[in-house]
Length: 446
Image 1: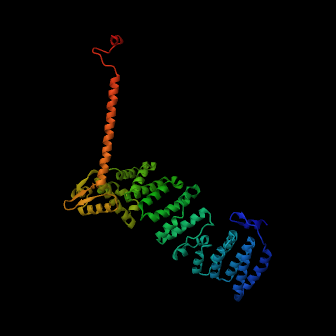
Image 2 (image 1 turned 90 degrees about the vertical axis):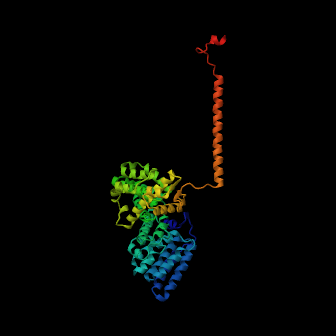
Image 3 (image 1 turned 180 degrees about the vertical axis):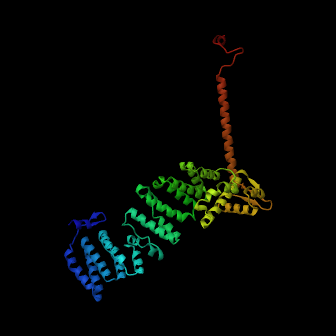
């Protein structure tokens, strides 16, 4: 009775059993299993069980319904009919008012069949089945790797940690196949607030390791944020050397990021990080890209080149290292162009090329690139070779500036008049000075 009460709980409420089909199941299930051994009566046996399943489901006899579901999949398995097995599992799961507990018992039975599949193709197809392919598939990474990876599907029956572990495994497989688009889609299924739990720090490190591999070639600013998140992890806090290395990577990838508000905000956040006090070399490097001073690339290489080349990010033997070194030079030149635009309203192209240590053609290329990205607003007088950093204002902008200036002027006049009136009032109240000394009361009376 307790078992019936437990399994008759449907979506959080107790469902009253209207008809008890226990006796009917005891009679028909063995009979149908015997019929299924004859190939000519295989379909007939399944039809009988499907009718019985409908009766038990409508009659709310969930215990008997679970027995029927298990019997159906057992018959398909014993006949080694894998197509029928997958088909009937899908049909039975989608039946209206089907008990979740009955379905769960059927799926538990099906999970025992997966490792008994006859060949790799059948095993892979079973592994991909949305009903029971999630947990069973984790033991066959090689098979999934060679045949296209894992499918997302429904993981609602798993606890949170198991869901995250499965999603991380799917991300790893997609990265191994260099399917970056699918990896991004799968990664969005994880809410990073899950990693605030101290017990999930191992999964946090695994998640950010995968995200770094995903974003390191496509988004430097995201990669910097991933490294900073690793720095804040409790597991890394006890490993000073590894934590410092993660902080260095966060700084370097931030410097390599294209200039925008997000990058500027990230730079300021990193500069305020107390851990950076332990890394004076990289604190100074970050300061160079934050201050309004020109940076010489050759001098930078002389001072920091040997130090930077010790990290994989600038390894010249890899395509990623070569790309990062080229991006470092680009960020430095773009920084210098922005500094020049702050100090000049217009400048000769030849002089600007000298300041940037570039040819005139390269200088124009960088200017064009920064204009296209919206970083700068520049006009070039090519015949005269003059670069204009200040644009001609429209009539409405001139009028707005004039109105703003006039308002500032009137405020200044009002404030000045107020101060003059204040001085006059104070002067009128104070007694007049007397020659030869301060006036006494008797003198004032006379």
